[in-house]
Length: 206
Ligand SMILES: *[C@@H]1O[C@H](CO)[C@@H](O)[C@H](O)[C@H]1NC(C)=O
Ligand SMILES: *[C@@H]1O[C@H](CO)[C@@H](O)[C@H](O)[C@H]1NC(C)=O
Image (cartoon, rainbow, N blue to C red; front, side, top):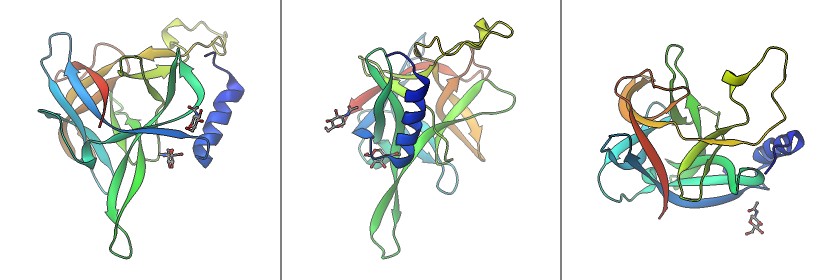
């Protein structure tokens, strides 16, 4: 689908009211190493502060439990090829005022460090990033331009086909006081953090 500015703004508005969103899930996020990495495991939401979770890596077989379960919201306004783009979320459990189990959805957003090109996807900051799943179920990030191609004074947008970008890693990362082996996103290559291993992240429906 062609990128259209009006559609983008409608997409943002739809996110705010959420009525026009469709949700798929729950699904697991299977993490498999590539480029020589033998990692094989699943992503899980790991405590990283009050109502903040990281996206941790855990080795092993098919998991169970809501800490491993994710959802995908999309409006249909934006896509890369045939793949709709939207946001990934999980349902954080809590106990409500009457003592009953309840949950609240938190969306995945990238948190950056000032001195690294490796960002950590985390839940609960009130920010989110647009992602999608390709025809093989692989999670991608997306943008409409590549700033390494910019020329002075020439606005690159809208020429706009969105592109699928696969720069997922598993790295030892330090965020909000916690040091976890967790999912990272390299904004440029190679990743600055020497512990990073390249991975694919694949959607596996529960
Ligand atoms: C995702 O969409 C569903 C269905 O419209 C909605 O109930 C939910 O609040 C949305 N989640 C987020 C994180 O926006
Ligand atoms: C959202 O779900 C409804 C009901 O299943 C469906 O009719 C509609 O086409 C879906 N929209 C998108 C954008 O997939």
